[in-house]
Image 1 (spheres, rainbow, N blue to C red):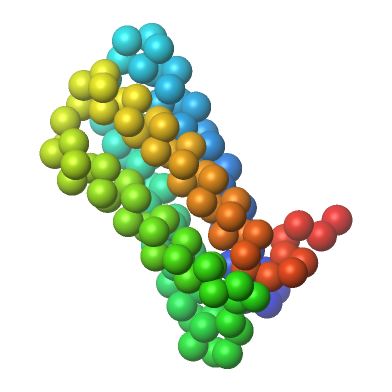
Image 2 (cartoon, rainbow, N blue to C red):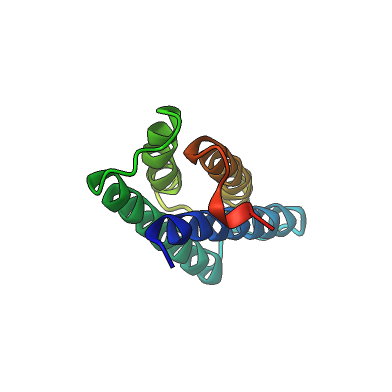
Amino acid sequence: MPITDIHCRVGLAVTFFAFALGIWGVFAFLRGSGVTGSYFGALAIGELLVIAQALIGLLLVLTGHAPADGLHYLYGIVVPLTWVAVYIYTRGAQTRREMLIYGIVSLFVMGLAIRGIMTGGANPSCLQF
């Protein structure tokens, strides 16, 4: 499998994982729950997935596979920093408020991942059926 396909498929994984974290966070907030250790663990897994995606993208750029749109670079920089920025902003607090913030931000990450896929190429390889 070409590395471009791997990059595209990991991008889809980031999208679906961020969606799951967003739904989990919003529903937990609505139930009155704060951030749990399980949720922090899932956020860490999501962050590792995003970092892997960024490293694969960097490898693609270094081997001469530039994205179709320069805006793709912005998504590649912003997405890995988003959850980290929220952690720094909330200072690692675990109240109900932070659960809502993480839930909404995770849905935002999902949107950024979708936009990243859209700006990566004219016809993403992982979306061909």
